[in-house]
Image 1 (tube, rainbow, N blue to C red):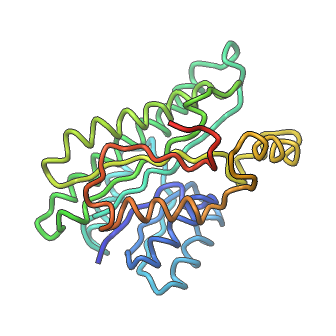
Image 2: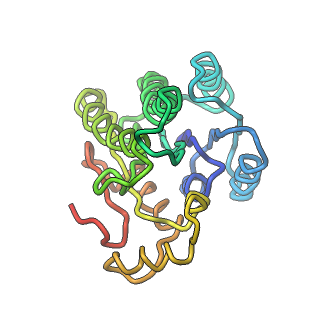
Image 3: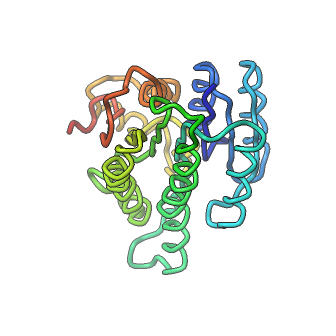
Length: 249
């Protein structure tokens, strides 16, 4: 059985990813900030019959991260799959953003990905883990292509996620670990609450996309499932765009 860690599991995308990996037969270790959302995801995943650990976690706290990954190995099995999904996205004009706020975004969105990958990668080298099961997926963002006003810190960290993906794919490939990224477009999630008129924003998204409908979290989760499963056994170092044809690379 595969053991998958999903960060940011309380949000719409993280929840869909967790449910899909549970349906794929994974045991799940889920984490997010404290709150009902994480518990709700855990309950949904258990409905698939999966083994689940759900723990509130501060990705900027190294001691908490160490404890969490040790718990996963002890209570489930060594990590075979990591999905780095958690991120924060404060909307602040670049010239007005306090350095402390930028540092917070960086610690969660970039350093958090880096540290989780390091801890998961060490467990993936356990002899009990088969080569074809050793996978990481970093969730990036369409914003890294065009830039978004008032989201400079977030955009910078999502660009970093793709660069980290390539570097880890190169370095960890000889150990049988595959590392890829998924770059979501504008999915209808709580993230869109930053816009004053979500309906107008939705119309704008559809106008820009080649496919004239909104995507669903389940469609993003299907791509993550592919990248963490056996059908992508020769795919690493890639960033897959899932945006309905808004941006084409």
